[in-house]
Each structure stands twice: as C-alpha cells, then as structure tokens.
Length: 305
Image (cartoon, rainbow, N blue to C red; front, top):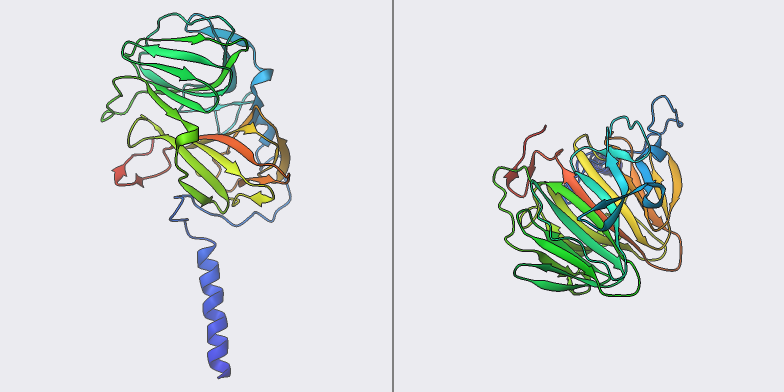
C-alpha cells in the first residue's frame, strides 16, 4: 500500500511537470515556466520599448483627409531602436480620425488591405457596390482594388484603429467588396480563452485575411486574469486597450494599460505576458496577431521566414 501511494505521488508529479512544459494544444502557444531569475537589463527586454500610445506620435494624412497617428510602427522586434517600433510583418497600426463634415478622397488600395475598428463618432463608408454606417463597434475590411470613400456624418471626430496588412500570400483570394461586421452581433467565440478571455472574432486568415491570423476583441471581467504565457520568434501579437484600465504583466515587470496604449509581446519565448483586471468594470482590448511561428495551423502549412 505504501509503495502504491509513493508510485501515485511520483506519477502525478511527473504529469504535472509535463503539463507545465508542453505546448498548449488549444492556443498553439508554447507555455514556459516563469523565469525565477531577477530582472537583468542586459538579458531581459526593456518592455517600455514594446508599448506605445498613439497620442505620442505625430499626425499624418492618408486617403486625402484621414488623420493617422502610429500606435505601433515598423521596426525590429528583437531589438527596437525606438519606442513602439516593433512591427515586422504588418505594414502599419494606427489610430485614425476623420473630422466632422469631412470625407476622404476616392481611393483604392494596392498590395495591402486595411481593417478598421470604429471606437467613437459616426459616419459612412461607401464602395461601388455598398454603403454602410460607421459607429462604435463596427469593423470594416477594405480589400485591395476596391475603390472606397468615408464620410463623417456627425458633429464629433470619427475615430478608429486601422491595421494595414500586406497582401503577399500566393494562395490568397481577396474579397471583392468591403466587408462590414458589427461587433454587437458577433457571437462569443469563447469565455475561457487563456483562462478568462471573452473573445469575439471579426476576421480570420481562413476567410478574409492575408497574413494576420485573427482580429478579435477580448474582454476581461472584473477581478480576472489572463493565463501568463510567452511567444516565439515570428509571432507578432498586439493588444490595444479600448475600454477600462488593467495591469499589464509583461516580462518581469508590470505597467498600467489605459485606453490608447498598445503593446507587442516580445518574441523571446520566455517573456510572458498577461492582463489583469483589478477593477470593478470590464476591460476590452483589440487584438490581432501574425503567427509565422506556427509550422501548421488548422491544416494550413506555413513556412518560417
């Protein structure tokens, strides 16, 4: 009986070790134990270089009259040379505003497509085939070779986040018209993603996207935490706070993440991240990710660059 009890303890101990070190099948993310070594600036990433607020970026115009400010910009994710310059795969990620009574010029994208997520204001977007209302919670995918215009029909700025992804996949077939999705009507994909994420998915690589795996909104209920985990080289995963304030656990430090702040998970394999909602109100984040660290995903084989 004693030998059997010892055997059970040893068996469960081995199982626990295995479960805490093998890849997570559900998330396709390699889960690592937390590094017990103290923070070392010569080894550990400077997490502030991986975070930025769009208000700290200069404004520039696109589509004639759309005012954009970089949230995160192009750079070297292994060693950023300036704050927020961490994007390797996505062309740009910005906060965009169209002021009251203003319209963009008729424009057509080439070699890229844009994903919009409206956070405030109201307006319309029109292609040659479709006209749709723009208001808080609306996602729009604008494919290449599709002429479009936007108009602010309200008295306040029409504010949105804009993700521009390159159209580079050989087998990618772009949409023939703009695709409009209302977040309020999207069914909940799961309420237990990484423990406690309430996920709604607007677009994914199997249907509308070229290199971005998913574009989601993720909500954390009060007093919940996301499972701390890390990512490998080739993962470009971005989290942007839309509503509320949470504690960002990134690497071996914590920061407060307020609306407008985005971060990229450093692709070190050992730099864990998590969001913790310590408040009494829900926290919502906009999420997108390029997953070139996956050798295989849902039957689609992808090679490393």
